[in-house]
Image (cartoon, rainbow, N blue to C red; front, side):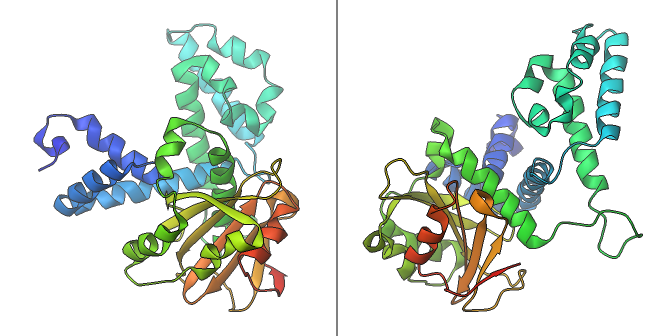
Length: 305
């Protein structure tokens, strides 16, 4: 019986499930989560929901997506209503309206600026964001002119771009994610995750080609659990390289012997599969991507999705 269902500390399990969705569990927390889910398998759905919510937020902050005029208007109206109703900050609407031009930039909604407007504005912005993403995710083949659900490669690409950028920053929470510091531990870690052995020879051989292993940890991108591996090149000024390794679920239209790309320049994400394993690679520096791809023995034939 877990703490939540005993009633001793309800917040602890909720926090554990959220950390699982974010891929930030420590080894001890992973053990606690496994024990909890064995007793309460219904809570797996809560983890999956948080993963999908995070993915939706990542899509909303993608370069080709920003808050539309209608959403901005709704948020401003909600702020005005909150102020009129005796909110804690009666000047909230005025202060937000004064920065109206900044609200046209998606960075305003995803960065720290919105936090300065207090809890009310943050909640309103989050509700508006989720409502917007739900509204724009209509099933394929819907009425003409309506937006459709993003393709699998777009969803994965948006996730890895966001997660790569997040993990470039050093913080205690990010440090908890990367618990594997010896690359020789990767095959066993991956096997325990997917239930079948893999050599991951290309990763173990990367150092011989100038791509040095840094660390790795469990991650939860679209398509299933994965190992997130970080590398650096011999260039000391270069940014890290991120590689996700997960079991191929056949959700992407990929052929063996081909490296597929999504995006361009430093936003380019590379996909390939070998022996039932899918590899997803990204680097913040344009020149490091192709080099890392070759070091990891990705197929030489390259095609865009």
